[in-house]
Length: 315
Image (cartoon, rainbow, N blue to C red; front, top):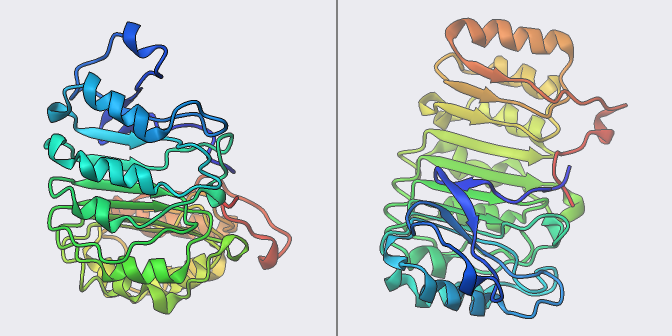
């Protein structure tokens, strides 16, 4: 599977595409705080740089009321990191006092495959927006999450087809005392993923994430190993949602997970896109659904052997 569609909403607000330079003078714009504004340019041969489009946005919209911002494609995202994008938003941070949600890299496969998206250091951006509550980024190539410190951030999402272990460890070292939701797409070794379970220790213990309620470690080719590690992980006891979806989870991982600490306190267990046998699926349902746990076992995949399993999103 690839990322086929742009985001439809962010932080509960419908996405709205800020018009291009030709259409903008005639466009009727919605109230600034009623939508999630997507600012984007053509990924190929754009006549306008992203920073120029953003400058038009700052002039056309009452930015003091903007609550959600989506960074779409910048010019040649397959070849160029969004350093100027980050610089532009940081420079305008004082003009965005109501911004609560930000997503960088809402780029479809037609614009640039997820594992080809170039990224950059995100700490300068996140740290410059103390009012931010939700942050997401797509693309792991060149991504740097070093030095993040934010007392108010509640949701962090990192979507990749392959994430370097250094980035994983740097997320684990971030100072995010209010974080409630963490979602990491680890990806495959073919596209740069080299994480082992030991690199996930900060998430498994939860010691640095005292407010965490929802944990997603997904889209991974080591999904069985992650499931086994979570079977005894201290963080699980205080989670409401556990997400191991989109990866290569098979009966071995599910067996370890069910054989560990109880999961009946969860509100939801998301395992969609998996390689579980029918008896194992029935066992999971019989164990958890009577306790009120919502279990997502959709998208059952098949594979000839363990080596032929695949993640939902790679290239």
